[in-house]
Amino acid sequence: MPRDPIKKLLFVYNADSGLMNELFDAAHKVLNPATYQCRLCELTFGNFREKATWKKFRKKSDISMEFLHKDEFLAQYSSKFMPKYSFPIVLEITDHNLEQFLGTKEINELQSTEELIGEINQRLA
Image (tube, rainbow, N blue to C red; front, top):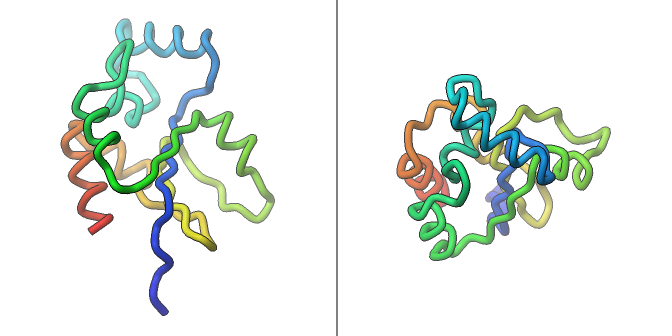
């Protein structure tokens, strides 16, 4: 049976939303980057704003993308039938499913924004 086409990629950061959390995360990235818990955040954002390479890719991409913090994702998608996910994660949304596109382990192994973009493009091809 053929796979449903991907309608959207859902990026879920391993960080919570809110101004105080954003300030804490920015400080954590600067003061102790080795212990920062969100590789996806590091790949897509610098200390204070979105990385130019990522922003260009995101704006030119043909695939729709949505970005949520972990607490926002759990509030919107939490269900007793949904598998437990680790974060960060990228999920694919089709007409009928929500499935893993890039898992935490895969994201954590990426070394650069360019590798993330390459991996996304390869999986979409």
